[in-house]
Image 1 (tube, rainbow, N blue to C red):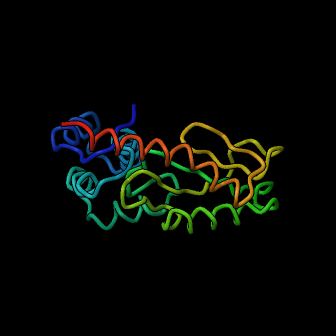
Image 2 (image 1 turned 135 degrees about the vertical axis):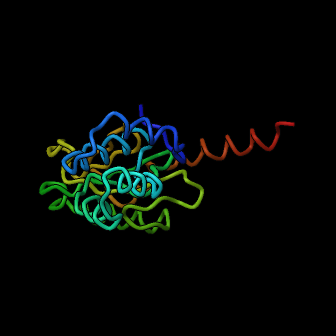
Length: 170
């Protein structure tokens, strides 16, 4: 189960302890940390470097090379926009740009309130429904920029309800 939040030194140490101090374990360690925390916190990168006895820049270099790694936590409602061939040809980039404007973040970013994060993916596997985006676990097909913004409305309403409920609580 993926959880977001700052890692504890104890949690990081437990993950490191399950691996040998070998450079070949760098990617598995990065993957395990990301699975545990939902992203790669700086503290985890520093601890991995120390554990493997390599310079932190080497760990950073590997982590930034691969598309699979994130350096910011996912938002409460993570959004993925497909830019695979079918979605790209069906104006997937316009969907992505619309969401960047609507949320006031760039790809790979998270909104200031941590409610939405935005990522692009190479393929979702729904090419016949292009262009496609995913919000949380829900696939939205045949998107337009307007429909993409519209798909966020239920989530924004839920956020507002939660804010209202928390303001009413004593």
